[in-house]
Length: 276
Image (cartoon, rainbow, N blue to C red; front, side, top):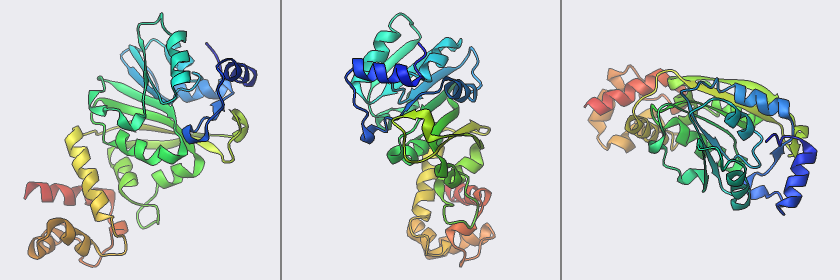
């Protein structure tokens, strides 16, 4: 059912007795063309499984279900909208609706291959994206709508203030782009900020444990950006001689700071330590 129209959304909210909740980031999409364009970014095939994060009233869901994908899993934190979606798609055996916080979802259970889509609430955008980058080889890509400035941070380059673990992972394991902007007038109620769609495809994914360990390593090494790479790595290895040797082996000066090291250098450094 197409629901990305202002009148339809208002009527449904009234019927379901829903007051949009800021804590859930409930700004409902009210433009069918935008909804269709977002789903098109996934490049769906009949072999794909799709997981949608925060489907709300189903603006994107309609186009997912209308495609010929294998399976559509909807993860919705709000019980009322989850029940509405379960009722709407109860006759389609491909659709599964779960009422839960996406941060409690076990991404190790993703079917092969899966693509993820969603309009991410601002307050948990970063934790969700971190989980997606650690999901493992079953996840082929994702398309998410986020606050516009978030994409600038995701694509941050070396030596910039936003450069860190997540931009490094994004640069190393796939290709991401700002697909298009979505203005506040495309939502009800209208948010106070602009949004944009970020599309990402994995090109060299790794096993889940490797990604988790690598991300944990990056988080610790960026824990204190003011310290040198030597001091941060020493705090990780707890061995002065080993720390110096590893950095020298990788051609990294002891006085470099974390934001001065390229994604490729970070991965090489991590692999060197793993092999010791």
